[in-house]
Image (cartoon, rainbow, N blue to C red):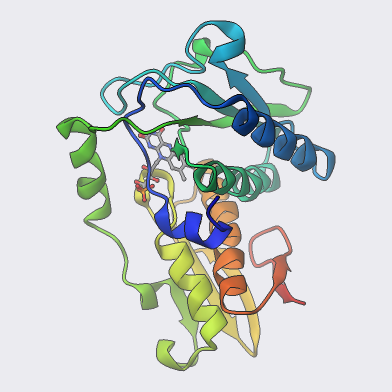
Length: 251
Ligand SMILES: Cc1cc2nc3c(=O)[nH]c(=O)nc-3n(C[C@H](O)[C@H](O)[C@H](O)COP(=O)(O)O)c2cc1C
């Protein structure tokens, strides 16, 4: 199994799933991580498993994806900004575990058939996104291959993710490792809407785009998790306070 940081570096959005089923022990490990996440948060993540239901775990939009999906995380969580951020943060933790276990994954908030999944949704909750999980197809069709290069062509440069009084190169190495982890992470339609703010020795994060939407609250949570894994790879463990401008607390 890969380490979490190796999984972070390897991860890309997989848009073509092969025929191989997910090994039962891999599905069980992901199910138990979901149990842990739900019991320590207000989240209500669930797994849709084709091996149990006899139908694809989710139907993805064919223009964006190919193949049949064997396993899919259904990311149900509280409505509202903090709900979205928590879904992003813990969803990314789950996604990186799936990658570490050898599966291909992708965040999908829009381009799937909502009627192909039937999660339990409590009062004040909603289905924010799904994460298909499965063995990557040996060959990715050209259509799905070109989506990534097209979307990633407008990537921001690393130092553009930082607001600080100091030049990027002089920031502590663990802050730079965190920022680099955000840069290679996913964001909805690759908007990369998050900035790290390093001022007075404090690290916070904010959405820099003027026009904000709910999808970006997930992007914020995802970026917080990516930063945390990146910083840890450079020797600094810590955790985040949720909310825009929430602080990173190094241990
Ligand atoms: C919150 C969120 C929602 C997303 N929704 C979709 C989606 O509905 N359809 C899709 O094809 N990709 C979706 N993506 C995947 C992004 O397009 C992809 O992560 C981004 O383009 C970066 O490419 P990469 O993940 O290969 O690095 C989503 C990503 C995030 C973070």
